[in-house]
Length: 156
Image (cartoon, rainbow, N blue to C red):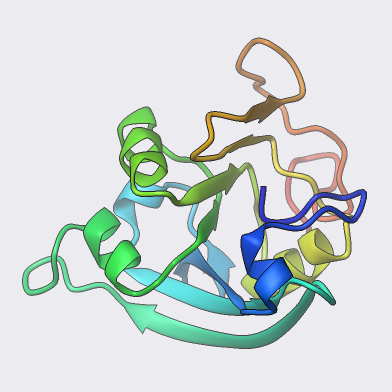
């Protein structure tokens, strides 16, 4: 995984190179469904300090850009942080070497900063090495407690 909560790092951390994370969005909020996103935020992360270096809005043009997965790979994305994501996008992204972390809601910058600080866990993750991280073996209907979510599932 890009970041281990216990301090482990990926290959980018060893080389000191920034990690690029794509976050599908509508306005300044995380888009609930990856497959419907046209707007993204690209976050540049320092893997050593686990800090947000830059957050830049980007638009994916459905008609002139390549399909979304190829576009993200072309743009140098290492991981996707999103709300929900269909299995076909999971398979396509992971086969291209892109990690996926899903189950996030709220304002993009707040969620990214909370995730980097270790205070906001995804509902699930999938890495190109096949490492899958779910808190339970079945699909959960309600999000687990997280500082980014209140009792109704979203920060007010």
